[in-house]
Amino acid sequence: MRLMTQVSTEFLSAIARAITGKLYTDEQIKTITAGAIGKYFSEFFPTPKDELAAQERVESARNHISAASSIIRDMQGDLETQDRTLGKLLKEVEHKKQLADRYQALANTNREAFDAFRAEMKDALRQELQEQAEKGKRIRQAVSAILWVVTLVAGATLGAYFNDIVTLIRGAF
Image 1 (cartoon, one colour):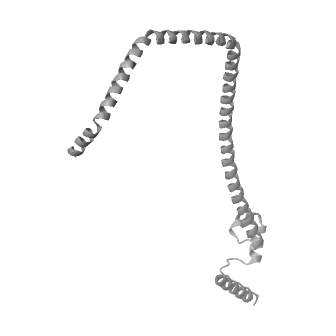
Image 2 (image 1 turned 60 degrees about the vertical axis):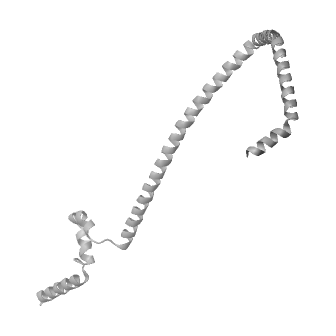
């Protein structure tokens, strides 16, 4: 009888497992996972809902950490690029400052000599321009007088024959 009871119990549990899709009962799972071999196969057995939720939270946290790491790497790359650019600009500004200081020193040193040179050049240029103006003065005056006379005669001629010229032009068109 005892044997019959065990067989029927096993038979009913096999049917229940086939219907529910579970291969083992919760008790059997605990027994198997409690043993030394069960520790190696425990990942193949179903886990409680709390453990599944914890694993989902851990996986979500890993995804967030991965995304944050990616953002931080991108920002660090941008900052390194900006640092290099600013370093180049700083070197360029320093170079320009050194040039400006050098030119300022040259300007201060040579100001007196330059002022004397400029005054001398101004006098020499003024004298040269006066000499050139005097050189062709008579010729320019003569040409100017001839042009004035020609302009006066041409204006008088046009004034005298203006009506005849206008009539001639109207007739052509």
